[in-house]
Figure 1 (cartoon, rainbow, N blue to C red):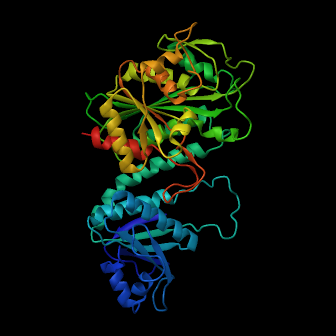
Figure 2: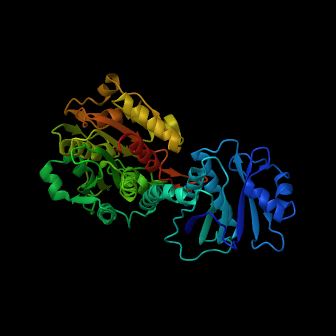
Figure 3: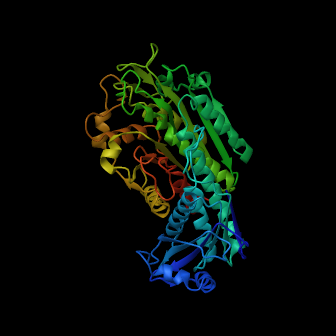
Length: 489
């Protein structure tokens, strides 16, 4: 799909879309089209439930003599902010694909026209995503592929420039959705590492550590999780150097359990197929690094992903085992299904030890307990730094990748105390997401750190205007916004 910005409309399009402000007030472009169609637009704006509220859409068949099949009225509301424009863009692309349109012209008349036009295009791009790689035949009535959308605005050049950066972020979201959607026989540690290596084309330095290198580093926590799998575990490091040479990097660490059976502590069979997306945190880090490199972000950023497959064979880790992490701290394994924190323990320690980052943020589909607390509306946010937590919360509200801060404290930390090792990998019946975060905090070594538990927001059973059913890509927009607002020179 090609999205272009122009000061002039093409001569022909399957669909023409014009804006209507709240209260059924026609924009200038809508008024011009109303004049051409002998009042059809104004009559359509007065029928049904359409009132011009934000992201409302009304559709009418185009009259004879107009080089289009359909006319759409778009609700511009009273005030048109970024999220409203994105939602409208996603709604637009859904309606166009459902109607069978292949080309469309959208007229944008608004305050801050360049920003609105670019954000509508961003919403269109996000909403157009589909993962249909393994569908060999389409059924009759399936949505149509859009070939070209032209957005007509007086600020076409500026809108195009703004969309360049937004499109890079959208490409990062696409990559995150792609890898999370892949089946586990296709995506496993080695192939996920291969996806990361493709980022070298954008200027990202990619280093892949295998089991031999991780054994030498003493990563017993991460390696223990993957020892029951026929697939070799990997640690992937991605470096984007867009800032000054002396600037300490910002670091992002992702849990990458490419399939999680639970190991010897086997999960129930129903729903286990969903555990292909237990690598969601690593998918977000991968997509974020693509977004930062794609828009040439002026920041030094490190992305580290620990990649393992948790399988129950004769060599698998057992409840009762004790492993030694890279930090030298020992861990009593009481449940092999509490494995993500073991992967992150070594990945976090490695990251802070080698790169000395300004801040370090990890992402993981870590606990079902976070869904009990927050449902599927917010990711859980845990942090040892108030400013970092506040900045992430604000970025989440601005991008609709919402986070909610959860507590940390000594009382929770005592729940993971072991009588035979430095700690145990589960904390008991209560506060499961909190005790998991307490576990991770033992591996940040005083670095300013935040943990995002994205178990409830990585995968969705329903679609929204800008995200399909399935992999949401949650976290890429959030962290890109966070970086651009606070860490770019």
